[in-house]
Image (cartoon, rainbow, N blue to C red; front, side, top):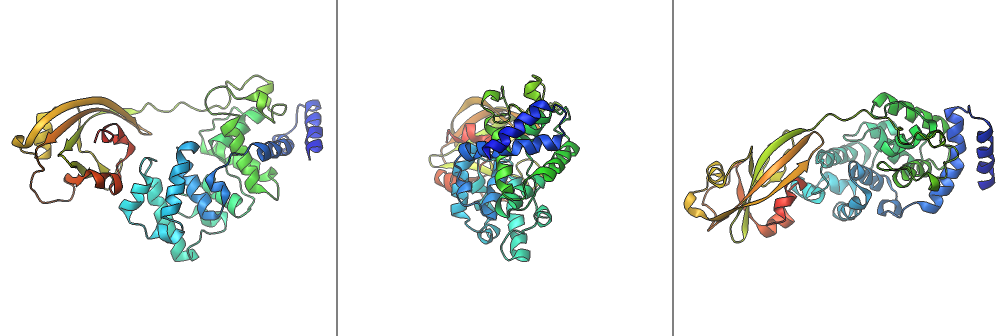
Length: 370
């Protein structure tokens, strides 16, 4: 195998006009050889069943691999089967997802698990088309599950793969466009091997994550595809891949109130729609305000306030919004006596906040002060 792909490299060096398909076919040997020696040990690769692949791929969206590892292990221990996920209480599911962000991913996991139990006997469908019908599963995740778990000949094209292919072929197409992604998927589908499709897809992803990196200079000197890569040969790696700049995020000012008694803290459940829907939060308000206004907004009698202090400012970035937060700690002599009402803040013990109620990472700068 090694001798074969070295010969392919020599052929390529003589023929500068090889098609994209032939260039990718020549890359297969060195790519798989490199992956066999350099693939990272990851918990979801230990037993790459459909469920494990699915959960890991959803977690890895918008999240670094190292951050996902402990979440994946805890999640699989809590929900070891699709049936257990389908039956999960919403608050418990969100608690296990707490800190990963993009909570709609977790909601879609449960929706898909319910469908899998109702239609497929508690298993994921074993076709690409069937996987694509499940909530939260796009072309990439469907391709990953289909190829890695079921051995189907389907591509799994994420940002890593788009970057590798763009540089390999010196493509100046905007990789942010869905049409370009579909073209890349079709290209891979035409050239990927008949066997070992999961390993092939993972090799492309891995080389994009470790060598043809998303930020900073690619490690061309360590890349097994260096002699094949047109962007490297033409010194275009700083220009490729091409991606249109993102729109500027909307900036919102917010005041967050950390309201405490000796052993309790005030939280509130957010509305069902919109940002951080149905999750718990430290209560707050739009704009920057002070302690007195906080007491008024929260309906807390002034005589219960023992002391207050301003907390350090904090910032949290969502995909399209940036919160710039002012924090105010309100220490109360005791919790006010009132009935718990839907949508209104309520006190929980600090132990319950840690074990039961999911609080998004947006509030982590103030939650750590509890």
